[in-house]
Length: 175
Image (cartoon, rainbow, N blue to C red; front, side, top):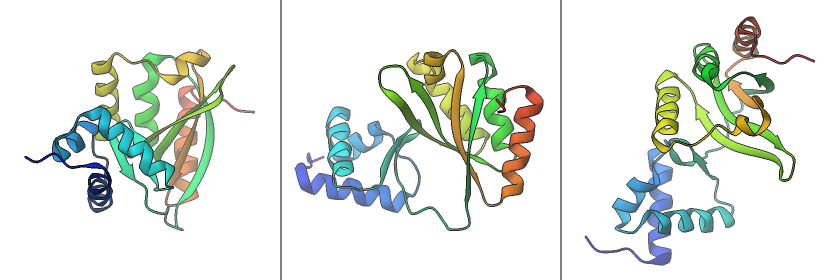
């Protein structure tokens, strides 16, 4: 397979992301372009610098189409142990709600946000398996378990249901 070069490669990668409509891992993009994963990281950063709406999620790179007008977002504050993470995420996605991201407040860097885009149990399991494989830590470890999520759904009632489930589990932090 021929190695793709520079701008031609970035245009092809961008088209792949747009067509797929779902996350693609850096490894898969690297195989497609016959380059290293580090080249893909650089390409994605260059595309982001051009204001292409690409986000890095735990499942891979995603071309972020405009959010449909019929979606509702809510920011929630959660606190739990790392052992309760699966329970937290399942409680949210089982209500038909997407966990868009995780946010922590860092003493030096300020707000740190990581895109998650977890919409169902398969997404949650993939995320947690990847976490175990990479031996990475949760961002919430930086804040002793306190973190925020932006969650989204097609209506406010689903968001209310997810918030109620988290409250019943003792995971939701209330004002």
